[in-house]
Image (cartoon, rainbow, N blue to C red; front, side, top):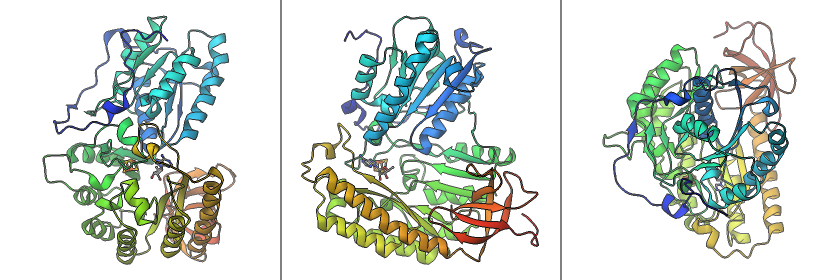
Length: 483
Ligand code: 5AD
Ligand code: SF4
């Protein structure tokens, strides 16, 4: 394949480097003259894969596109710009993205002026980029996680050339403030508090695709939250790959506990945060969560494995006993707290005994819910180079057994809600059945309920009649004044 001089291709080795140099902070967003109003009368379609960080990035992509004049399209068939914001966490994400890109071939053959672009974590991966360049000629723009803010000039460049435009930087990253944002929710908002990750768990691609840990300043974060509150938002979720490490990269003496406390003092109704690494989870954080009613009693605390040797080989830096001690301290000190987790089965050379330790931990903790995955080797990460004699079938069986076990406990936890009244932040009519309303409890349980005179964004009391593994059913309590 001919590589033109102005292509910037990803380089995972470079992406994994870390230096102590100061992080560049950019406060203003500039649109080049050639891009101003370039989207007038045109439309865009965005497709997003993966985690909340990607959802939030897509809100920025949409914000930039709308600043240029583009409007949302009804679907990709009619859009002038199609962007796919990708995720690289597991291999099946790549298959899904390639499937979607394949389906755009027809659109391109009917409308060759359409700009089809790929962004996000997978664009930071060499193998993926090579495949797209070789087999998907209708993808005309590739850019990564570090140059979202350059979208206006990237679009101009793509329009001005017959060649593909590829700008992917494998750098440690900067912090950009004041980028345009088009929030997808009206009552719940994502707020980035930091970017990147320096933990380098041995299975994980994120530290390579999203650069080094860069915290936003407390001032910038609180300003955003106050503005959201003033605009009628009722819930914010503080986002970071590892929120507990917030501030460690800043000069000031800032901790996540202090950020949480200041966020609580803004008076916004509901505060959530994710994801928490057990390593940096302090007792001070537990105190703050317990002390403020507007910090939701829900914690996502990835376990990954219940076996200390596997945890060591994963680079997680806690033992199974330390995890359990932290779990106990969280559940003892935060009344009514719900805890969910992430678990990987089939990490290289995971023995039957090691997997049994994971099951034991799940039984001991009785998680409210769990996101469970079969280990997926990510090229360039240390675990991808480890010997792995465990067969795919054994891994599938382990996943099935694990799901069976956590489902049982989750249902037990849900059953405890029957006959109780909970506060629900209403999202609107349920996706499955528009005749009922749906929303989430403080502990992040999905509730479907009946009731009159309730609108999206209200926080209302709901009496729970029946519990299922993944949702609760109930009715609005009308004799208590609504929030
Ligand atoms: N294979 C399988 N699961 C993974 N995760 C991260 N990397 C991998 C991988 N290579 C899971 C972890 C993490 C969640 C977001 O995805 O459990 O917490
Ligand atoms: Fe990946 Fe570990 Fe960082 Fe989470 S903490 S993003 S699992 S490297």
